[in-house]
Image (tube, rainbow, N blue to C red; front, side, top):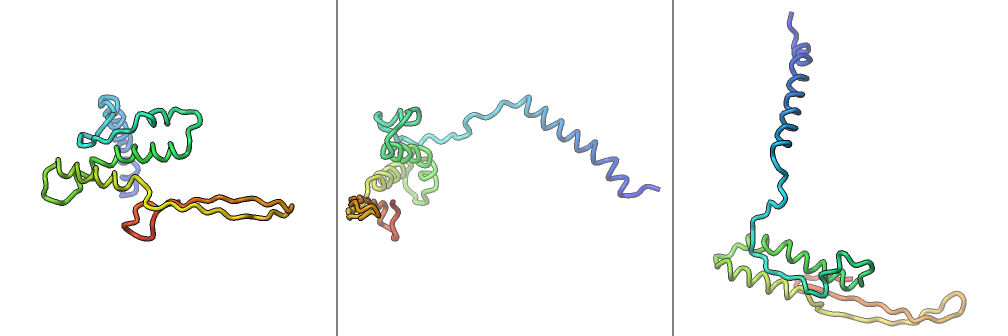
Length: 144
């Protein structure tokens, strides 16, 4: 008598092995895709003074932040142009996206705060703090 449980034990393992082998064969034949992206709208350039930041041994924090902003602009610019819903030409969309990115780059507000602090040892120390706010078009603002 043929049981469903026995049928599953006899048919499924060879089928599973053949599927795995086919997957391995396909991966051997097919070359790995290096760059799948085919959009070429992006024209954002990283400034020359920041190009060595990824390989630098000890870069300044501000330079790293600025480098990653420009790198993020390069990565996202194409998608922002494609996702824009307005019925304008690609050139106008590119100009609008570039304008928005330029608007986001500088800080809207910077505040510097200094206050004295008396340590347990009796020494006084001046504490210096900063707060920078970006993109104040929507509150609460982002910054640190």
